[in-house]
Length: 205
Image (cartoon, rainbow, N blue to C red):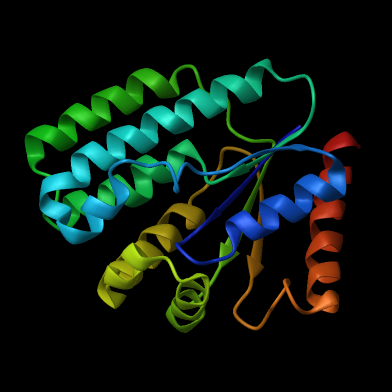
Protein backbone atom coordinates (compact mmCIF):
# COMPACT_ATOMS: atom_id res chain seq x y z
CA UNK A 1 0.00 0.00 0.00
CA UNK A 2 1.49 3.29 -1.14
CA UNK A 3 -0.48 6.45 -0.32
CA UNK A 4 0.91 9.88 -1.18
CA UNK A 5 -0.19 13.35 -0.12
CA UNK A 6 0.04 16.20 -2.62
CA UNK A 7 -0.43 19.90 -1.99
CA UNK A 8 1.06 23.36 -2.01
CA UNK A 9 3.51 24.69 0.57
CA UNK A 10 1.66 25.03 3.87
CA UNK A 11 -1.34 22.87 2.96
CA UNK A 12 -0.75 20.45 5.85
CA UNK A 13 0.83 17.48 4.05
CA UNK A 14 3.44 16.63 6.67
CA UNK A 15 0.97 16.86 9.55
CA UNK A 16 -1.53 14.61 7.79
CA UNK A 17 1.19 12.16 6.73
CA UNK A 18 2.22 11.70 10.37
CA UNK A 19 -1.39 11.24 11.47
CA UNK A 20 -2.08 8.64 8.78
CA UNK A 21 1.19 6.86 9.52
CA UNK A 22 0.11 6.52 13.13
CA UNK A 23 -3.47 5.58 12.21
CA UNK A 24 -2.52 2.74 9.86
CA UNK A 25 0.91 1.88 11.27
CA UNK A 26 2.51 2.86 7.97
CA UNK A 27 6.06 3.96 7.31
CA UNK A 28 6.15 7.75 6.86
CA UNK A 29 8.36 9.20 4.12
CA UNK A 30 8.69 12.95 4.67
CA UNK A 31 10.01 15.56 2.28
CA UNK A 32 13.68 16.44 2.75
CA UNK A 33 13.35 19.99 4.09
CA UNK A 34 15.35 20.52 7.27
CA UNK A 35 18.47 18.83 5.87
CA UNK A 36 18.14 20.33 2.38
CA UNK A 37 21.39 22.22 1.63
CA UNK A 38 19.81 24.44 -1.06
CA UNK A 39 16.46 25.54 0.34
CA UNK A 40 17.55 28.67 2.24
CA UNK A 41 19.75 29.84 -0.65
CA UNK A 42 16.90 29.16 -3.10
CA UNK A 43 14.46 31.53 -1.41
CA UNK A 44 17.15 34.22 -1.25
CA UNK A 45 18.15 33.87 -4.94
CA UNK A 46 15.79 31.73 -7.02
CA UNK A 47 17.53 32.36 -10.34
CA UNK A 48 20.83 31.01 -9.08
CA UNK A 49 19.64 28.01 -7.08
CA UNK A 50 16.40 26.76 -8.72
CA UNK A 51 18.02 24.09 -10.89
CA UNK A 52 20.21 22.81 -8.03
CA UNK A 53 17.24 22.64 -5.67
CA UNK A 54 15.01 20.79 -8.12
CA UNK A 55 17.67 18.20 -8.94
CA UNK A 56 18.19 17.65 -5.21
CA UNK A 57 14.47 17.13 -4.62
CA UNK A 58 14.14 14.88 -7.67
CA UNK A 59 16.97 12.63 -6.52
CA UNK A 60 15.65 12.56 -2.95
CA UNK A 61 12.16 11.62 -4.11
CA UNK A 62 13.45 8.94 -6.48
CA UNK A 63 15.34 7.34 -3.60
CA UNK A 64 12.13 7.43 -1.56
CA UNK A 65 10.24 5.67 -4.34
CA UNK A 66 12.91 2.96 -4.53
CA UNK A 67 12.62 2.46 -0.77
CA UNK A 68 8.82 2.30 -0.99
CA UNK A 69 8.96 -0.33 -3.74
CA UNK A 70 11.32 -2.46 -1.65
CA UNK A 71 9.11 -2.18 1.44
CA UNK A 72 6.69 -4.98 2.29
CA UNK A 73 4.50 -2.77 4.47
CA UNK A 74 2.36 0.31 3.86
CA UNK A 75 3.88 3.73 3.23
CA UNK A 76 2.55 7.27 3.39
CA UNK A 77 4.60 9.73 1.32
CA UNK A 78 4.74 13.50 1.77
CA UNK A 79 4.63 14.82 -1.82
CA UNK A 80 5.31 12.88 -5.03
CA UNK A 81 8.00 12.86 -7.69
CA UNK A 82 5.36 14.02 -10.19
CA UNK A 83 4.92 17.29 -8.31
CA UNK A 84 8.66 17.93 -8.44
CA UNK A 85 8.49 18.00 -12.23
CA UNK A 86 4.96 19.07 -13.19
CA UNK A 87 4.46 21.66 -10.44
CA UNK A 88 7.68 23.06 -9.01
CA UNK A 89 10.20 22.72 -11.86
CA UNK A 90 7.58 23.71 -14.45
CA UNK A 91 6.63 26.78 -12.43
CA UNK A 92 10.24 27.88 -11.98
CA UNK A 93 10.88 27.44 -15.70
CA UNK A 94 7.77 29.39 -16.74
CA UNK A 95 8.65 32.11 -14.22
CA UNK A 96 12.11 32.50 -15.74
CA UNK A 97 14.10 31.11 -12.80
CA UNK A 98 15.35 28.04 -14.72
CA UNK A 99 16.87 28.60 -18.15
CA UNK A 100 15.90 26.50 -21.17
CA UNK A 101 19.11 24.43 -21.24
CA UNK A 102 18.86 23.46 -17.57
CA UNK A 103 15.14 22.75 -17.83
CA UNK A 104 15.60 20.37 -20.76
CA UNK A 105 18.39 18.65 -18.84
CA UNK A 106 16.05 18.31 -15.85
CA UNK A 107 13.24 16.89 -18.00
CA UNK A 108 15.54 14.26 -19.50
CA UNK A 109 16.61 13.24 -16.00
CA UNK A 110 12.97 13.02 -14.90
CA UNK A 111 12.06 10.90 -17.97
CA UNK A 112 14.88 8.48 -17.18
CA UNK A 113 13.76 8.14 -13.56
CA UNK A 114 10.02 7.91 -14.17
CA UNK A 115 10.47 4.68 -16.15
CA UNK A 116 11.32 3.03 -12.82
CA UNK A 117 8.54 4.67 -10.79
CA UNK A 118 5.15 3.21 -9.93
CA UNK A 119 2.43 5.75 -9.05
CA UNK A 120 0.84 5.61 -5.59
CA UNK A 121 -2.20 3.42 -5.02
CA UNK A 122 -3.97 6.50 -3.70
CA UNK A 123 -3.15 10.19 -4.09
CA UNK A 124 -4.62 12.58 -1.53
CA UNK A 125 -4.65 16.21 -2.67
CA UNK A 126 -5.02 18.87 0.01
CA UNK A 127 -6.65 21.84 -1.69
CA UNK A 128 -5.95 25.16 0.04
CA UNK A 129 -6.35 28.79 -1.03
CA UNK A 130 -3.69 31.45 -0.47
CA UNK A 131 -4.96 32.80 2.90
CA UNK A 132 -4.89 29.29 4.39
CA UNK A 133 -1.42 28.58 3.00
CA UNK A 134 -0.02 31.87 4.30
CA UNK A 135 -1.54 31.34 7.75
CA UNK A 136 -0.03 27.85 8.02
CA UNK A 137 3.38 28.99 6.76
CA UNK A 138 3.47 31.83 9.29
CA UNK A 139 2.35 29.49 12.05
CA UNK A 140 5.28 27.10 11.63
CA UNK A 141 7.76 30.00 11.57
CA UNK A 142 10.57 28.84 9.30
CA UNK A 143 12.82 31.86 8.71
CA UNK A 144 13.53 31.19 5.04
CA UNK A 145 9.82 30.74 4.25
CA UNK A 146 9.22 34.39 5.14
CA UNK A 147 10.71 35.14 1.71
CA UNK A 148 7.99 33.20 -0.16
CA UNK A 149 5.91 35.60 -2.23
CA UNK A 150 2.14 35.49 -2.68
CA UNK A 151 2.68 35.41 -6.43
CA UNK A 152 4.85 32.29 -6.10
CA UNK A 153 2.13 30.50 -4.10
CA UNK A 154 -0.55 31.59 -6.59
CA UNK A 155 1.43 30.21 -9.51
CA UNK A 156 1.96 26.91 -7.70
CA UNK A 157 -1.76 26.67 -6.93
CA UNK A 158 -2.57 27.14 -10.61
CA UNK A 159 -0.13 24.40 -11.59
CA UNK A 160 -1.72 22.14 -9.00
CA UNK A 161 -5.21 22.86 -10.34
CA UNK A 162 -4.09 21.96 -13.88
CA UNK A 163 -2.24 18.81 -12.80
CA UNK A 164 -4.95 17.47 -10.48
CA UNK A 165 -7.57 18.24 -13.13
CA UNK A 166 -5.95 15.77 -15.51
CA UNK A 167 -4.50 13.27 -13.01
CA UNK A 168 -5.10 9.72 -14.26
CA UNK A 169 -2.36 7.62 -12.66
CA UNK A 170 -4.56 6.06 -9.99
CA UNK A 171 -7.18 6.75 -7.34
CA UNK A 172 -7.47 10.40 -6.30
CA UNK A 173 -9.02 11.91 -3.18
CA UNK A 174 -9.36 15.70 -3.12
CA UNK A 175 -9.86 17.26 0.33
CA UNK A 176 -10.63 20.97 0.63
CA UNK A 177 -8.87 22.07 3.83
CA UNK A 178 -9.68 25.78 3.65
CA UNK A 179 -12.24 25.63 6.46
CA UNK A 180 -10.58 22.78 8.35
CA UNK A 181 -8.14 22.58 11.23
CA UNK A 182 -7.33 18.89 11.60
CA UNK A 183 -4.64 19.69 14.17
CA UNK A 184 -6.85 21.33 16.80
CA UNK A 185 -10.33 20.25 15.72
CA UNK A 186 -11.07 16.58 16.48
CA UNK A 187 -14.14 16.58 14.23
CA UNK A 188 -12.12 17.82 11.25
CA UNK A 189 -9.49 15.16 11.86
CA UNK A 190 -12.15 12.45 12.12
CA UNK A 191 -13.79 13.66 8.90
CA UNK A 192 -10.54 13.39 6.96
CA UNK A 193 -9.66 9.99 8.43
CA UNK A 194 -13.12 8.72 7.47
CA UNK A 195 -12.66 9.88 3.87
CA UNK A 196 -9.23 8.27 3.65
CA UNK A 197 -10.48 5.07 5.29
CA UNK A 198 -13.20 4.67 2.65
CA UNK A 199 -10.64 5.04 -0.14
CA UNK A 200 -8.11 2.70 1.47
CA UNK A 201 -10.71 0.01 2.11
CA UNK A 202 -11.90 0.43 -1.47
CA UNK A 203 -8.44 -0.52 -2.71
CA UNK A 204 -8.85 -3.95 -1.16
CA UNK A 205 -12.37 -4.60 -2.42
